[in-house]
Length: 194
Image 1 (cartoon, rainbow, N blue to C red):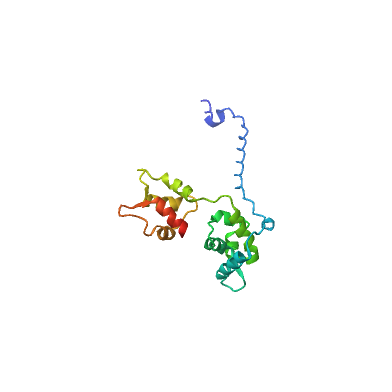
Image 2 (tube, helix red, strand yellow):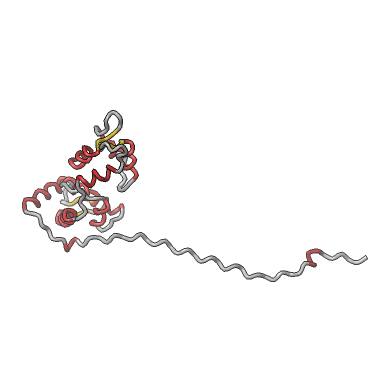
């Protein structure tokens, strides 16, 4: 009897195939384009002496430490108290795109604040009553000058500079009728007067 052949040994040896080339590493996602900070040293202050005195007084009301400075996070609030309506993005750009820690830790004096205020006042991106009304008209499905309060709440909480529930509630208090609808022209007038 002939010896049995080992089936494993009988199989011809396979050539070693080269390992497939590793897939190229994905290119890193481009870093978000940083909006350049504003050069505040180039801003020309155009306020009258009376305006500067009024602004200084209002600025002083936000100084909680007594060092004639305010925290970065208060700059937008002061501007709004002075009748301006800057977005948080605009204020961050003016402040030099600070980190969250810088917003609470860093402080600015009144002389540093004035060019910031002047920049916001000179900003060409001022929206007017008609712009806001036209934006809300998109949500007026029936063409009757109203939008549903629930829909407006969702928009305020999810689009653009998102608002908190507390902010939305305080903004919309007394604006909805018995059907939950809001007259958006009256709503815009209310917002612009606040």
